[in-house]
Length: 119
Length: 112
Image (tube, rainbow over all chains, first blue to last red; front, side, top):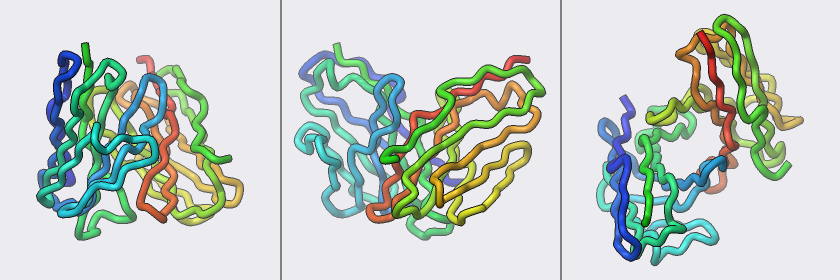
């Protein structure tokens, strides 16, 4: 159990286009999902916390108009990188917490990540 | 310590060797310490969640200890196998926002 599916796993796009990344919890409901970004040889950095039915909470320095997050259901959150530029090229990964708390102590369940390359 | 620090950054061992690595984290406002195992092209997988000072957890050949007063945790792998090759992440859970603060990870390579 506790599987999180993230798509796409790899995307290449032209500068100025928008890219949508999906994060789905397959066998549990997730009130809260998290979006992280990882640059080469760096740690996973939290971008935003996504709560079902409400606006996402963005970390300092993350542009909310640039990285649009939608969490319309208990099993799906999306991250849209709008007007992507080469500096947005990075590895993006989502995680989810089980709403029912059956999975103990705030464990986060991760997708496999999306590598974004903006040309 | 303000951030989560992991050492070494990478480690190469032979099959059968035992190994260990370190995670250092802020000792103030401690709530929990998480260890994840991350194989290439897969999802990070939770190994342990540790909350109590002096706690020791074990999962097969992998074990972890926790010292919240001095702010460190050790992960041990006994008799490493090639399938143990992965990046091991630790993350400090501060509790106030429900956020995990990650270290950069230790990349373990086990040669057959």
